[in-house]
Amino acid sequence: MHSLRALVISIGLIAPALALAEEGPGRACKNDIKTLCGSVQPGGGRIRDCLRDHRSEVSQACKLAIADRVLERRHTTGSGAAGSQKPPAKPNN
Image (cartoon, rainbow, N blue to C red; front, side, top):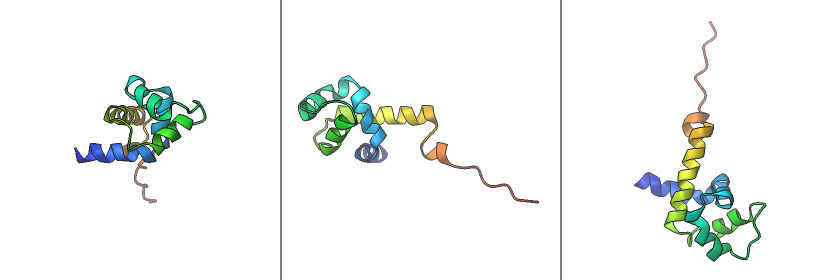
């Protein structure tokens, strides 16, 4: 539970994660976007920035949907902690 909480908190620090709010995770964030960022014109990361500015007001469902999408993207792109580690260097013999 602690790691999930840390992940949700880190959402505000991960720009690609909040960029998803414009193109997905869809229904979970729809009301948050309308309520918190209704006057913001979509595009150029403006919705992402708005949600970041209001991160304490974003619903738990939206935060979890974004976190799920981030994990999904990391898994499919191979990025993240496990995907970014380099293999050990081979000794020169």
